[in-house]
Each structure stands twice: as C-alpha cells, then as structure tokens.
Image 1 (cartoon, rainbow, N blue to C red):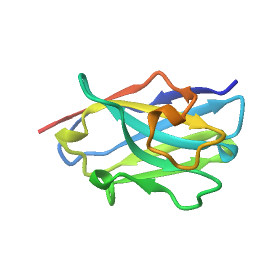
Image 2 (image 1 turned 180 degrees about the horizontal axis):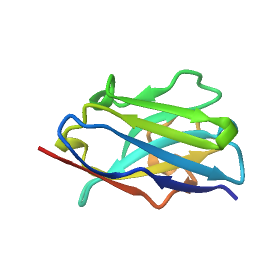
Image 3 (image 1 turned 30 degrees about the horizontal axis):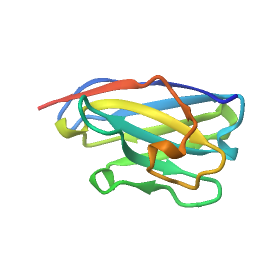
Length: 124
C-alpha cells in the first residue's frame, strides 16, 4: 500500500516561491509514476506536473512551464514541486498522486494513490 503525505504549502505574494514535498511510503518513487494536481472549489482537479521512470522527461501543463519543476529524491522517497514566479491563478489545493501502471498522465482517474493535499495561496 502506497501512502503519500504532502507538505510545504502556504501563503505567498505574487512572484514568490514555494517548494512542495510529497513523501511516499510503501514503495520508492522511482518505481512509481508521480504527479502533482491542483484543485479549486467548484472545478475539476487539474494535472500540473508528472514524472515517470518509464517516460523519462518530466511533463508540465502549459500554464506552469518554465515556472514549476518536478523532481524526486529516491534516497528520501520524496517528490518535490518547486514553484517559482507564483501568480494568484496558482492558488489551489495541491495534491500528490502516484500509480504503478500509468505513464505520466494528467487524468486523475489514472492514479490510485493520493495524498491529503496542501493549500497554496498566492496574493496579488
């Protein structure tokens, strides 16, 4: 059973940075496809970034390219999302997701394991 715990959310001003962490237990992230999603009230969960040992290169949704970076530290069983140049539109609950079978998907139904979420609020 894979368990995911996110941390690192908070409140920042426009242009600020945050580094989200997702600690995985049960399996090492290097064997999993990992992704970050975000969701605001009344909207569908949106895929932000993903990384997969079988896909190779990380993949980002267009609105965060050049500002967000997904990475993983296998020694710490942790996946990170470094978020720079934050905008108010980035305000959301951010979730970490993982699965064995998917290859870097932004479909939320493709992931069987989810963290509890961490809130990111960006003020203008």
